Amino acid sequence: MKLANRVQALTPSTTLAITAKAKELKTQGHDVIGLGAGEPDFNTPQNIIDAAVRSMNEGHTKYTPSAGLPALKNAIAAKLKRDQDLEYNVSEIMVGSGAKHVLYTLFQAILDAGDEVIVPTPYWVSYPEQVKLAGGIPVYIEGKEANDFKITAEQLAGGITPKTRAIIINSPSNPTGMIYTNEELQAIAEICVKNEILIVSDEIYEKLVYGSASHTSIAQLSDAIKEQTIIINGVSKSHSMTGWRIGYAAGNEKIIKAMTNLASHSTSNPTTTAQYGAIEAYNGPQDTVNEMRDAFESRLNAIYGKLTAIPGMTCVKPQGAFYLFPNAKKTADLSGYSNVDEFSQALLEEALVAVVPGSGFGADDYIRLSYATSLDQLEKAIERIHSFVNAKIEQVQQA
Image 1 (cartoon, rainbow, N blue to C red):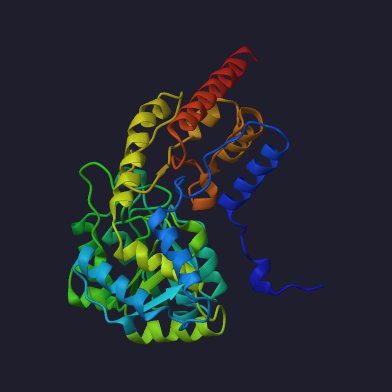
Image 2: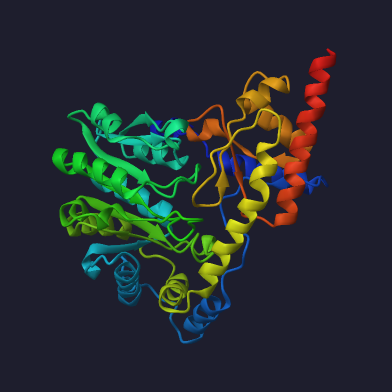
């Protein structure tokens, strides 16, 4: 049976593939430590769970408006005002079944065949695939390690063509954890406004920022930039609600209306119970958000030095999110592997540590390790990698 060309051209999610392989080995009895999944290891805060249960007991189990409950959109508007001093009407907010679904709907709403979207590398694995599914063309611009994996305004200006429709800015970044400064955002935004390029600002990791770093939404910089920006966010990472599938877009009312019309023919509405949980997430106490952030920062500081002590391994210390993105090319070479993909596969099969090869993020020489797991497991994983590399180097030297 013939499949549609659009799905035949898709590249499977590298992170999900690694996670699936790790689970398969675990079911076979192997003690695999998985550092691939991009989700907090904490349970959803109890007040959010209680609010969701209460909503079901009160009979809130029916359809909602396609763009989300008015109460949730009001809670999101209040959050944007509270955290970023940004004002949005409820007509400028659309709630979807997770930030990933919201991004998918956005690209379906704004792209025609042949339209280009600038995707800085390294990128989250789904960005280019979603652009392609909408008939668009991802145009890659390399964020160089020397610039903390961020693209410059000059690079952006050089990548714009008459077909450029949008650019994706993910700050803090998955997979690098790096954050754009206000000055960098301003320079990029001015080019976008001048060329009428839509800024897709993925801010899903905004609450996970460490040390002296701070997060600024690019929409905060001016009214003109705000008008040219669609903010993408949600409760998955900030409130440990990955499985609840609630994300949102905030921006131009015309685009939000188009996204809402599309969603009405795909999901009808986000899951009702999850929406009530999200209302509590935004309106309720935020203590647990800060507690989880502090735990991630503590883990990062505890393992960063141990990771960079592995022969050949170098890593720019992340400023946010919960990933380390070390350059493993020299480590792979020293260990006798021809590329980092082979090295990553061997780590999983022999050292029983699951990492995600950077090829899935458009950066072949790197690996991504998530520290969204217990410190004990993290330290054990780093020790395994270190021992594995030392043993492989010894074998190479003796050959």
